[in-house]
Image 1 (cartoon, rainbow, N blue to C red):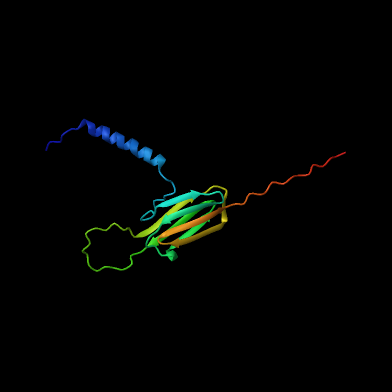
Image 2: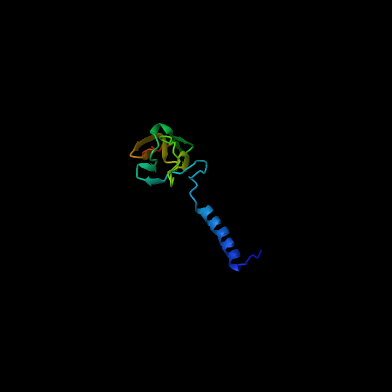
Amino acid sequence: MLIRHNPFMVLNEINKLFDDKLEFSERDDSAVESGDWLPSVDIKEEPTRFLLDMDVPGVESGKIEVSMENNILTIKGQRDDVQKEEKKNYHRIERVRGSFYRRFALPDTADSEDIQAKTKQGVLEVIINKKKRPESQKIKIQVEE
């Protein structure tokens, strides 16, 4: 058996190594790879709050858990099969079933006591209000004699 040597194959392998390293350093650390699928998320900051929209089509609201601890927002859930099909005549299956788990580090301005979550048309919306900043106050200077 003859194996043809391709000198460019080594360069391709080296490029893959560097691509992997760049991909690793630029990747989104909020995606924890412990779930079966990762829903897409949009995060927006407004003057008084943070908004997070997560695509969760087919996930029942009772199967989603939202929590926050130490300024880490955690969202996990489960998308189950709606019905079991006895026939094995699928040509293609793209819709992923199973669990998902995402974590997001929020700044200290996020108010962990003031968070709301709701679902509508397959989108989970999480609203995290910002902490109210204390108003400035004048401090009276005492004169010592």
